[in-house]
Image (tube, rainbow, N blue to C red):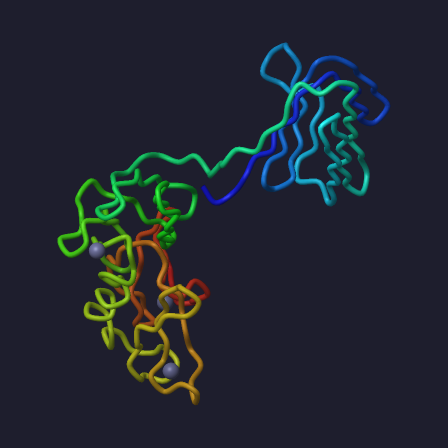
Length: 243
Ligand SMILES: [Zn+2]
Ligand SMILES: [Zn+2]
Ligand SMILES: [Zn+2]
């Protein structure tokens, strides 16, 4: 639980654009400042403002007042009588993918990572990775399937069983630089895997290893990759690649 949701309830006046509404409502304030005002009916809030630029909250034992603003809109909620207020832990809800071997916590896959709901530990996934049912023989965390020229199945913890090492072992010096003929080396820059020319800095050729599998060779000497969007030369700008 890395974040908190604030909940306010009471008989309130809600003012949004030209609309004024009064009634018993529940106001949710998300960690990203998104404000939702719910009344008794349906799933839709009676008013809301997603990620406002500013949010001010005044609250005491007698009541509360909230003002959320974007450049164009203002949402204001003022209580006349207070039913209650509270703060609850919230996280991103993801798909369960197993248990953490040490904390016993449930692991969930969110957009870009696997998170342990018990400890909040986060394992960022590389793009295109899918989490597998199998666990890592070294640490017990789930493994992931990643395509980077070939199919690799490695621990989701890049510190345990680095994808980088597996890709390096397989593809370091596998291909020649199309510009100068030196070997292409597997390098990691800002979390991404690239093939960079061994003659750097004299030759600055570097290409990102996309999510895909090498299925042949381009006229330029680089491999052709089968990716989710089709086949292409490893160098996306290659002018010698013809389908
Ligand atoms: Zn592991
Ligand atoms: Zn080069
Ligand atoms: Zn090419």
